[in-house]
Image 1 (cartoon, helix red, strand yellow):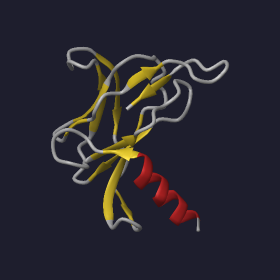
Image 2 (cartoon, helix red, strand yellow):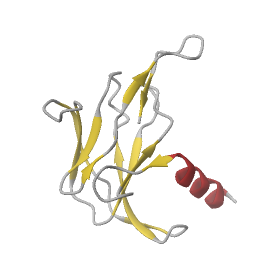
Image 3 (tube, helix red, strand yellow):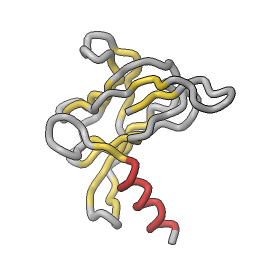
Image 4 (cartoon, one colour):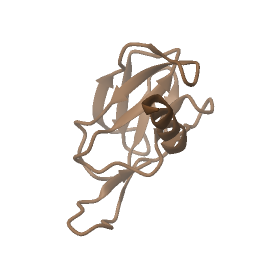
Length: 121
């Protein structure tokens, strides 16, 4: 049951990127600055990724992709980009070396009492 729920969440909330469709999947709803933030990258996985300005000229965060693993529910080989440490609200994109870039990551206006805003994909 856990695997089914997790695969349903990944399928429902992850978003394709520019370039080859579906190679970088991100939470479509958005991320709170202090919450976990991951992207699923379909194989073949490169070694690194970065969070940049929308133009790609400023780099705000860099990281290494996790080890390639097989995701049985989808039958795909994937790597994880964990950018949880990146907490600065604003408008960004995720670029995976030799693969492509995500759609917009943007800060949303607070919608919950005490909310600090969210990074939105």
